[in-house]
Length: 232
Image (tube, rainbow, N blue to C red):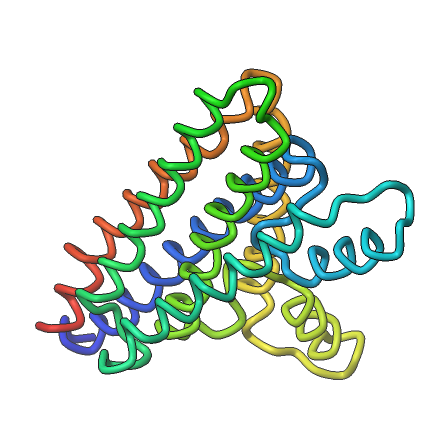
């Protein structure tokens, strides 16, 4: 098989791996948000909307401010990323995609600063703004992943992935070749959540800092390897 014919497959595999790393990042961020920021999801907006609804109903003293700010942040991040990527080639890694992910890393770094230097008497308000920053980063990440369009890997949710995994399984009479990436996406999110929970034992900022570093690695690798392969 020629080099020219194998390059697209190599590029697709590399992009898939990078999206799985970002899925792992989402697991860390959601574990940090739910366990360390008063039960707020920053990436999983389905869970966040449910928590917001329960909080508005006064159920179990669930928070309202944090989930509301996270929802607004996610929408803002997705909108800004969508606007930035509007004129970039869809289904490919572009320079603008790298810039958006770099912006996500900056937002995560800002959240780390707040977590490290917040004062006790402003803790609840500071945590709400941390949730806003995290969710804005996750919204931009999700929009970028949607633009790059790796099938069945959104980086932020796995409900549709699990549906496809079950509905297309051999048990259901299918046999989709996508079962491996779908399983990988679920495992990456699970592993990220477990890692995030463990990092909380050290400090709330640790998981967010690790997520920022991983996002920079993904952006750098994607820009210098995946994008270069695509343009050759």
